[in-house]
Length: 173
Image (cartoon, rainbow, N blue to C red; front, side, top):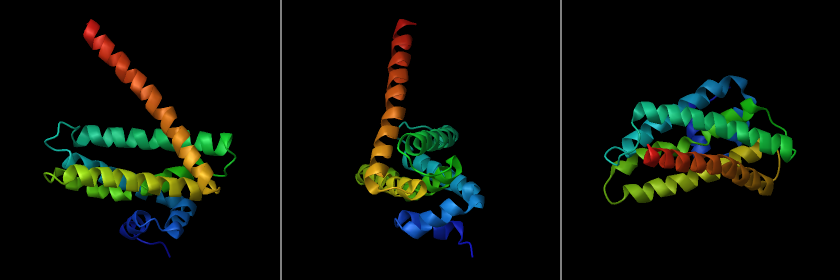
């Protein structure tokens, strides 16, 4: 029997390996994973209110684009480069649910403790992502960490270069 989205979110946040196996195998759970991404984006927007961060619409768009790119890059690195066995859909589902701890980003709005909570949730989500990669690609933890790290570099470096290019263009114009 399929568990509810809240049960799955709770299991994913608690780093429960059988939850990740369940969503990996359930081809109908991609919509639920997308819902998790949306909920977390809204929570991040709430937590970032008053801190000059993107609003809800911008946050939703960037969350979905980031989720799609992160899953695609992870698929290419883990499956094609490092020999894991997964489909892009399996990574979409597991990495979507790995964002479940992000509902606590809403606590970022609390003065004095919000920054600490946000940092803690970021690390928690990273660990959940490594478990998601481990389960979806069916390989050891070391290769899951390597996949996450290479994927992070593959995304962060081009984004940093684009940001630097944009800053130079603004200065010139």
